[in-house]
Length: 57
Image 1: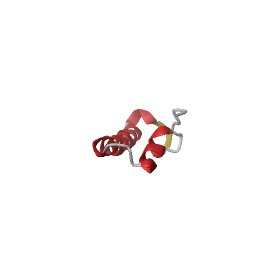
Image 2 (image 1 turned 90 degrees about the vertical axis):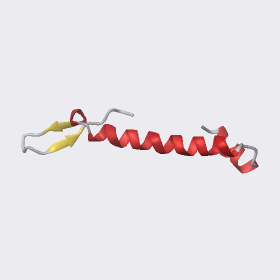
Image 3 (image 1 turned 60 degrees about the vertical axis):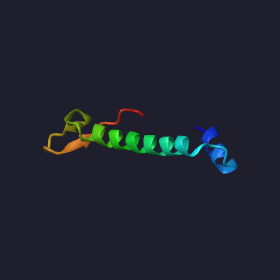
């Protein structure tokens, strides 16, 4: 990951690879959000409210 910004600044990264990297990070963020919507990601408390369980990532 640390090498990509330096290549972008130097403008040597081909456009298709830049688009692929950008869209790939968008997909990763979307999948992370969907992961948080799963029932297993939440723990029921005594008050009936859900509490998010951290996965440590």
